[in-house]
Image 1 (cartoon, rainbow, N blue to C red):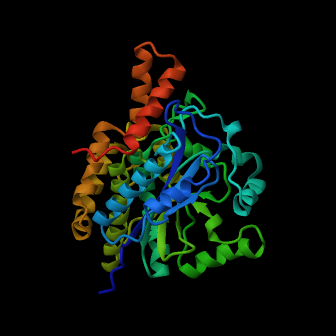
Image 2: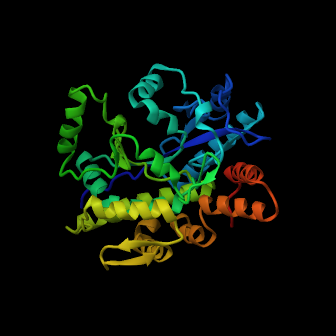
Image 3: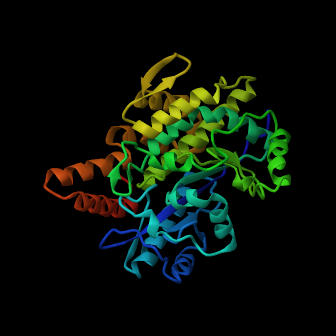
Amino acid sequence: MADEPAWSMGIEEEYLLVERESGALITEQPSGILEKVADLHHGLVARELFSSQLEIGTGICTDFKHLRADIGLLRLAVTEAADDYGLAPIAASSHPFASLQQQKVTEGERYQALAEDLQGVTRRLVISGLHVHVGIEDPDLRVDLMGQVAYFLPHLLALSTSSPFWEGRDTGLKSYRMAVFRTLPRTGLPEKFDSWSEFRRHVDVLVRAGVIEDSTEVWWDIRPSERYPTLEMRVTDLPTRMEDTITVAALYVCLLRMLWRLKLENRRWRSYANFLVSENLWRAERYGISDRLIDFGKGEMVPLPDLVEEIIEMVRPDAEALGCVTEVEHARTICQRGTSADRQLAVYQEAQAEGATDQEALHAVVQTLITDTLAPPQT
C-alpha cells in the first residue's frame, strides 16, 4: 500500500477592516495594528494588496481541533487589536457599500509592482478569499489530485458565498468576488497535467519570458503551492462564520482523500472538460446554494443540497479517518440556514421592509457581518 499523505492543513483568511460605528471600509490601516495582532497570536498575520485588508494564516495543523483553535484565536486577536482603533474585521468577500476609488494600495515593492502590472484592474480587487492548503508530499500526486478535485470546486464555492453586494448595490450574484477576480490573467480552473514536471515546464515558460516571477502569480482556483508541499484551494469566498470555514476545509481535504483511495484501487474520478465544470462554477457564483448544479454523470440538474448530501456520504470513510464527521455534516446546516450571502440579503431586505433607506439597510448588513465574524459556533 502506498504511503498515505499527511493531509496536514493550513488556512488563510483575508479580512476587511471597517469602522465599528459607521461600518465604512477604512482607507488607511493604522500603524501598529499588525504588530498588535502578532503579539497576541504568534505573528501569523500579513498585509494584503489594499490598506483596508489584512491576512491571517494558521500554523500547520494535523487535526481539526488544532485548526479550529488556530482560526478562533486569530479571529479574536484581529478583533481585539482592531478594537483599540475603533475598528472591526469582517469576514466577507466584499464590502457592501465601499467606494473603490478611495482605496489605497499597500506600500511596498511587491504590491506596487502588482498594481503597475494590472493597472485599472487593480482598483476592483477589494475582495477577500479563503485559501485552504492540504499537505501532500508527492508532487505528482498533487498534480493528479488537482485535476480530479476540480470537479467539486463549484460545490465548495456554493457553500461559501459571501459577496452579494458591490459598491452599494445588490449584484444579483451570491459571489460577486468571482466576477471581479476573473478579470485577472491566469485565473479560473487549472489546466490538466499528467505530471509535476509537465506543470513546471508550462510555468517555467512564463518565468523565463519574464512575465511572472514564479507560480505564486498563477492564480488558478486550485494550484500546487510554490512554497509548501501542499495543494492550495483558492476558489471559495470567505465564509463569515468560523464553523463554515472549517466545514469547507473539511470537505476539501476529505474529497482529496477520497480521490486518493480511488487511486489505490486503480480508479479515478471521471474527467470533464473545463468548459463543463465552468458552467457549474457560474451557477455557484450566481445562485450559491439556492439553485441547482449539473450532475454530469446523470446529465441533469440537481439541487445543491442533494449533491451535498451525496458528497457527505461519499467521503464519510475519509471524514471518519480524519476525525471530522461533525465538520463535514455541518454542510447540511449551511444548506438549511443559508450562506453569508443569504444572510446579508435577508438582513438588507428586512431592514428595507421596516422602512430603512438603502444606506441604513447596508449599514445593518455590515453590523451583522461584524457580529457573525466573531460569533461562537452554532449548536
